[in-house]
Image 1 (tube, one colour):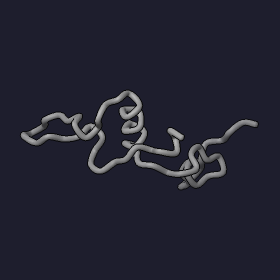
Image 2 (cartoon, rainbow, N blue to C red):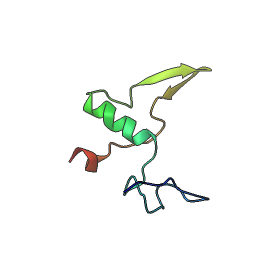
Image 3 (cartoon, rainbow, N blue to C red):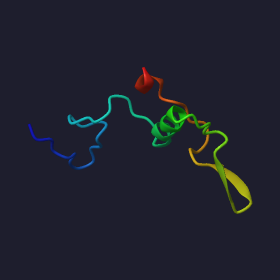
Image 4 (cartoon, one colour):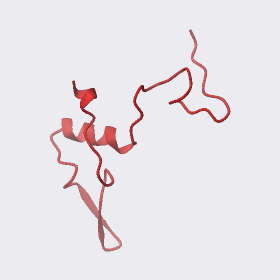
Length: 68
């Protein structure tokens, strides 16, 4: 069976060819990977225009279902 890309205004989350069952923010898989590598994502920051920014944005969580 060949998968077809979503057409029109459909996104992958609402089409029949669903890639993920539970939609997550783009930063949450990054947080999960950093967690598996033993890196605390809340302390991973960079300075830009005098302000410290997190690589994983603000309040993002580890996807526990992926680790189970």
